[in-house]
View 1 (tube, rainbow, N blue to C red):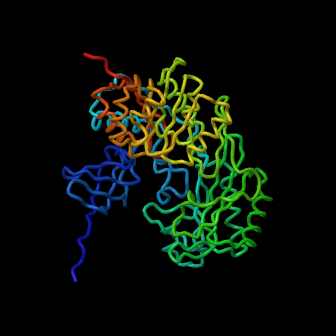
View 2 (cartoon, rainbow, N blue to C red):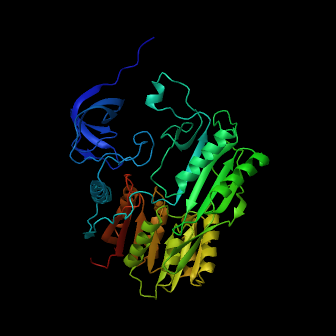
View 3 (cartoon, helix red, strand yellow):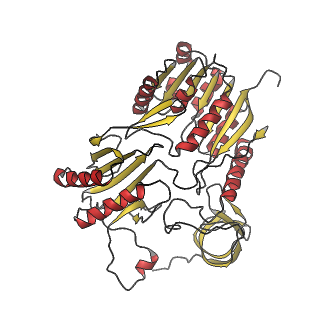
Length: 472
């Protein structure tokens, strides 16, 4: 039986750049090498784990020199947990690479010139900025390297934390997370200790047995907290005791809920989430608007930076009060309602019916009468008949998922001929692709990167497109 070919160890590689996906870049004999946990300026021996025709991937096994642009990671889980992968990169350097990513994508993929690229808007908070986290229970958690090589094997195997990247059945137990403000860590710690002390069964994803599946914690800027438990089976005596203990320990929990999920996956959208104590929603405020956030509602996870994003979208739209605005991929209507009082009419389109229900409720909650919302496949909704019924758009706001807009939607926008398009994107690559398709009829006046997720490579970008006049 033949041995598999061993991957090489490349010695003293100089890290020269950061890739769009966040990994560091080195070069070896004309080939690109993507390296984890490094920053430009590092010199390291790199163990290759994947080799393709045009590139290799690896990880550092020994550092010969550290870059001057390197920070000391602040989280004990750095390098194992899948989040906050740029803790070793100073924040100003993170912003620089994110700005470069946006410009590179527009030039390389979009092949468009941009009159004005505004400096990236930094997040005032770099830690404890998220308003939602989901944790997973595991009866057999991920073991750290130190634990694997330890002579003492009598450590607790049950854990509560995040999935290891690329390993759906492996969960890293989290001691402290820097993403969500307290009482997030305190609640997670209490729940774990209660479950261990009372021998409540942690879920076994492979065998599909156990009681405790997931713990979701949401919060608003006012400090109110929503907690949602996911249980595998309806063992109501144990469930009731746990929920009562959590409610007694944390009076700031204003919404305590649970769901019974006997399925093979963790998704909750098709399940009934039941209220145990308190309210069935949170309220978030932006300016004079209030938004009701239910357990299944989507809301930008960095609330304070989302407000900055929406202000920029309103500024880019340049509304005078007389416009008809279409908001594509409107979600729960947050941007649409944010713009409604600055235009004559706003029309929101979204393919998730539950999100449209939330949008309508929020419009009613804010007494906004000039906003209408429609659920369905945007490719099918946005046609000549729809536009004739709802009015010709002067401005189109679009905030699609990471995959960007379907070509049919782009053609429908071009056919509608709005004067301006404000394109918000969480993926500059697909945004650049879509802008390229729009460039025959529209020019890009300016773009504004926004950092929604510090210590990650992800970046939001807003682009303002204006229709070309004949002969321009």
